[in-house]
Length: 390
Ligand SMILES: Cc1cc2nc3c(=O)[nH]c(=O)nc-3n(C[C@H](O)[C@H](O)[C@H](O)COP(=O)(O)OP(=O)(O)OC[C@H]3O[C@@H](n4cnc5c(N)ncnc54)[C@H](O)[C@@H]3O)c2cc1C
Image (cartoon, rainbow, N blue to C red; front, side):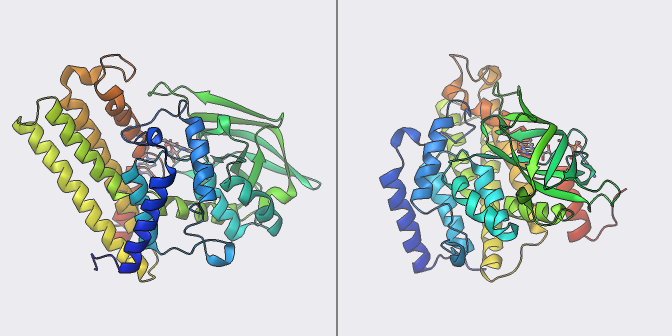
């Protein structure tokens, strides 16, 4: 395990930092810390994505032959660290950029690559993920949305749920069953669906935060041209696994939690709670956990840098950071005493309610990208060698 960054990596860090200093507007900083208000920030996120794309950052990890920068895993981590340290907002088309575009680049047809990738990265189109269904989340292979071939097009019927940002998205990368007779993991197609057509209805779901970022997608004879099928019509599951590989790779960012712990300590101090022994214990514990997470991340990075494929440690990472963040956010709300119970929009809410929002968001973190229970199942089976659960 090598804990030092090379001179080349330090030079890369300076390059990222310099670019951020020159390009990230002061009033766009720190919107992402402790929860953000997705409706209010839509335009900021759209413009920020365009800027990052023009700066050549959205293809940082892509291979050089695909026009990318071929950055090493360490450089990708440095880039994420610097974005977090600068308090950069998220980008609007994050699912298209981080999941759909690299999947199309690997598995899509030349026509799909030429038509869609640039539009996704430049935020000319926003894409939503249409995988989960009311009865198919953790058990995704149980999905029921049907795709029936009709000449050189497909007709889709069914329902998707929890589709993030579908209400402002143009297209969805969506899974549908092409062969109901095949075993669950076979007979699934990976489709690119135009969300603005008459056969598609998108409904927002009101959520705990007061926002409505997640949507149901109803497909009633929605039409997809054959050219918008990614890969073979029965190989959608493999394509979905490729997409999940990009999702797992992009989630861990130690500096986000380290900055959250610094903010937590400041909050406790500012509220006069810093000398309370119970508060001190919890804040110190949060510091230890964030530091442990960083050390473990560096170990995983060293392995990745040496060319080893990510193993089940991706599950350890996901489980650890999501459960840890819940504890950080819970402590921040508890430190506020009765003020912690105020709605984020309340005039008396501490620090504009950002911790309350962060606490609400943290509840979702142990669900998306594989829930904690699913991660524990993977660790039990693949790391500890326990028999498969019933
Ligand atoms: C913030 C957020 C954003 C999301 N965005 C999208 C999106 O853009 N597109 C999309 O398609 N989906 C999205 N999802 C949906 C997400 O993928 C699912 O919520 C997730 O897969 C879990 O599925 P589920 O909600 O159906 O819960 P279920 O699978 O029904 O699980 C319910 C509970 O049972 C537990 N459980 C399930 N199976 C097992 C098992 N075998 N062993 C032990 N416990 C088990 C789970 O851990 C959970 O606690 C998002 C979810 C969240 C929270």
